[in-house]
Length: 248
Image (cartoon, rainbow, N blue to C red; front, side):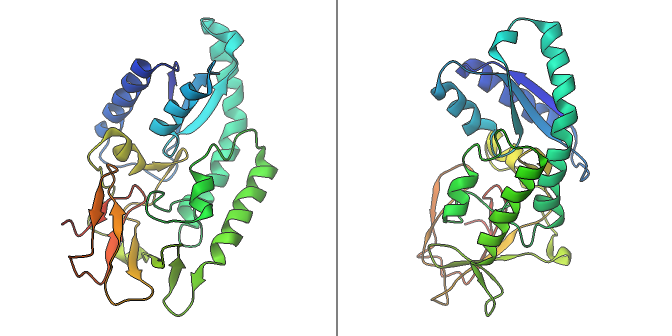
């Protein structure tokens, strides 16, 4: 399990992100058991946590270390070592949903482009303070809500913008194993989701529910806007980190 321990200041966040990308880049691929967790001391202000979550929250599993342990290396290490034993089964629950059950679970959805209350929830610190039982129930609830968006005729899941997201079949997960995107955040999100590995090459075939071509604006993995209104595309592939293929 890779771990990153950071403070809650902007320079520390940028340094940690750069360090994370360097570590991930050393390995061109990773296996399903790979895990990524980030540990930080409880921030004094909500804005500090929001900065950390914005940078790491959708790729790493984020854990809080009591602020009283700040600058106390040995007690901090002991706390993290003990807490990891409780975190491992939580990550197993997430992995089952995001990796093994990726075709029926909302956890690997591209959070910028699948518009729904489900992804709005997944953008928050949704698993905070949950034990294994509560986390399992939370994931089950998310999957049940996601199932309600399924369009059986078109074979995918419909979002609030009338886009159909059809999970790729295993034999369609070819080409780019883990699209890196154009930023450190996109790089990390191309490989991990909430601390667990993503299935190599997994993506969604996205079409319009009510028209033969896509006539929408989509977000790229860097957060910029790409308008498809003039491209006359019948479909586009969107990866969990919002990487779009074919490129413009």
